[in-house]
Amino acid sequence: MSDEAVVQARTAEGDVGSRARHAPAAVREAVAGVLEIAPEELEDDRDLFELGLDSLALMSLVGTWRREGSTVTFQDLTSRPTLRDWTTLLARAANDDTATTVPPGPPAPVAGADPDTDSFPLATMQHAYWIGRQDGQPLGGVAAHFYVELDGHGVDPARLDTALRSLVLRHGMLRAVFDEDGRQRFGAAGAPLTVHDLRELAPVESESELERLRERNTHTRPDIGAGDVFRAALCLLPDGRTRLQIDLDMMAGDALSLRVLLSDLRRFYECPDEPPRELGLDYRRYLAEHDSRRRTERERDAAWWRERLPDLPRAPRLPTTVDPLTPVTADDGTLTHSRRLHHWLGPADKAALLGAARRHAVTPAAALATAFAEVIAAWSDSRRFLLNLPLFDREMFAPEVAGLVGDFSSSVLLDADLSAPLPFSRQARGLQERLQAGISHGAYGGVEVLRDLARAEGAPVLAPVVYTSAIGLGEIFEQDVQKSFGHPSWIISQGPQVYLDAQVTELDGGLLLNWDVRDGVFEAGVPDAAFDAYRRLVTRLVTDPDAWDRPVDGLLDPDVLPRRAVAALPAAPVADRALHTRFFR
Image 1 (cartoon, rainbow, N blue to C red):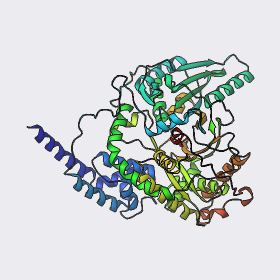
Image 2: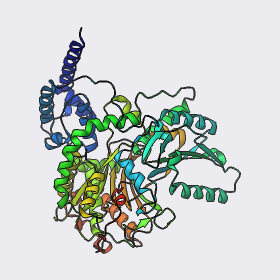
Image 3: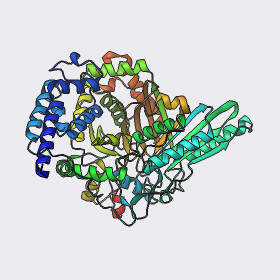
Image 4: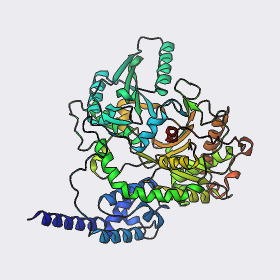
């Protein structure tokens, strides 16, 4: 058979497979799977968002169907969110695609790779992190990183060291080296485990040393030029207690990468004789493939965002004690440290919140984002402002992608327009629609949009108030990981160009609500009062069904929510490098 005949035969097989995967029964099964209900329970004309579909689940479905050859988009599906409409759209797309579907060829060359050094370009968010961590940047001088502590019992240092060595060999990004030109390469594996034996110290001395280590690790800025992007230490304590300290630079991995590496670490620790399986895909190759696949979408989405630039609001003006555009260095401890405010909703409260959101055709992420935005508006001088929402944009074009460690993050800027005095549920639906529109044009991310705004104004534009939702992504600290290494007792993230980073993550069957607040930026008492208002508003949404149908002004205590006018940000031009601002985490 000729090569052309082989291609035609494989194409025909692919077309048949695509049609089968997009048949009504297959679509029903896929949607029921992400909703965690039986396929027969799905009504053809029911709004899928009312049934609990969220943006993350939808992004996963779109990625799966596009990987199978469909051209259906996120925007197509959000505009018609019923099973009947989706089945029709997918069938039509499968028929339209048959003339152009071809089998995958050999891997494309890595765009921008240097064959002499094996270095390759940074992803967009990596570049923003790289710029922002340098001294002299607005809210800069800070590494973007995750730091966690797991308090357990009986963790064996030798087994852990062996497991860590296997982990670092498996994942090239855990030994990534970043050069002065803003490029990256995979470096040599080092010895990642440090052991702190505190068993013979008096209790007061032990606690003092643990606190010193926590403070140092929380606010560290490692030398990524030397490949210092992943650290692990084990504290040995009396009575067999242990504390595992993990630090991951966001240049090397995002939040879901933290889950991947913890899961792999547990497997290597529990099965020490199992050799590390080499992945068939690495982050370097992923970036090249991802950029190639997104080129057309990126051009389309760039045009969409640029049409909207003149009407986009700016960041909320909050009661701050310093100008957020003031250049910062790592030596300025008053502006480079963060602290965490947190509140946990138990499984019953989580279920109540998800059920209430579903009844009002709102995703839980949109409901909590609206609660956050309403509280921010109460302290801002305007009820319309720009929020920065990170996206977990891991494109699953191959099975190996799920097991990679790397920065797959993107972002979308959200026009949080709360100016109309609407009931909470209607306010949330409006915010949800704007968010979905932004996500559907997410191939051109928030970093690029901010750069466009900065070029248009001739001055830096920041979006330093961040809301991150990981609802629907599962628990980062899986139960098996906690059984091996302990319960997370300290979790914090920080990064440049951000002074308030709110997150919602799944933990122990419930939801963990966090605010990471940059020290020295806000007026005294403001973050604590605002977080307390946020916590109380979320509690009302959980416990009071009528709260969803009332304007938020009636749900918050006006005595503790003064709307504050703050000075406008200066518009003086700055060096071009400062325009490359980092705003997520």
